[in-house]
Length: 434
Image (tube, rainbow, N blue to C red; front, side):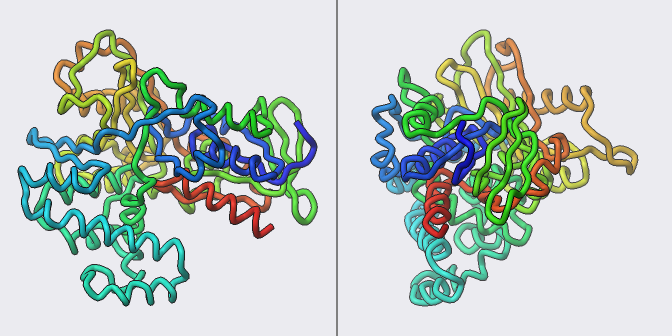
């Protein structure tokens, strides 16, 4: 590796790799390091904008993607609700069961995208002015709505419908939000962003991660062979980075594409943008035989919740150090027919008899059983098909902290639905302003 860089990206997920490749392609001396711990991965990633495809010429690296076929919520009563990438497809599907929801869906999508654009592209006063012009849009008076609760914001559109629980599950559950807390409304406009829709590599094509790693290599990103051991300020503008293998470099900026990556790398200030409960978990289930996916759709993104209060209740359980019996779980199938399950309602520490304590092996077994049981309640015959499970808990409490306590110019992107598009925009702004 070279001695000095403009930027070091820490993370090995799609937004991190894409941001590193884009920075290098723009002429910045760029380094890339893994977090040294698991992050919130899976077979699907948030969409990559067309402009980024052209900029990085991603098709030349074997990348070929399909949109996730649907977002599907599986309720306890056996019912399900699905939304699709195309607004008309969702409206047509809803029309079969809920004509009122079908009629409101196009306006709901348009309004939330307008709010998201106003929030991203304007200061508070400018955005308020933009929204004030939208006299026909009853929900948005000003950006102050985004400091409120997600439940209140979605209530302006949907009441007493499975669609409301569906939107809350897919918009809030990945962040460990309950919907009642202040600021949870911010997740909703981002959820409706066109690049928040998730994509998967086409069957037989190179994986998204594999293609982006190749792009990083071609555009001159220097990949470290070890994770960061320590980062310290070095002069007025740079940081000195020590890796686990003893190698040292200097970098102007340190960039994390998500709080998950920051936590996994040991940056304790990431807690400011982390979910309140402090933990997430990912489980891979290797199956000895295939199972029939819900709705017969193996390329959908699923959420398991019991009802519309599931996120609020699970978050309250996590905040009090308990694992919810009705744990919301997101899952998807891999091309090999295995399952990747995720949940963001995991306490960083557990509470027992009024005392806080760290996770034990028995706790992990209990969480594994809970996740498997939640999936089995929606997937017929799952228990008998499981060959092996692998559970990883992502928690700042379990990471080595303060590796970056003396560093400067650290950028942590908030948790985003459209993380790739937002990360590249943020990187470009930082480099342009430098």
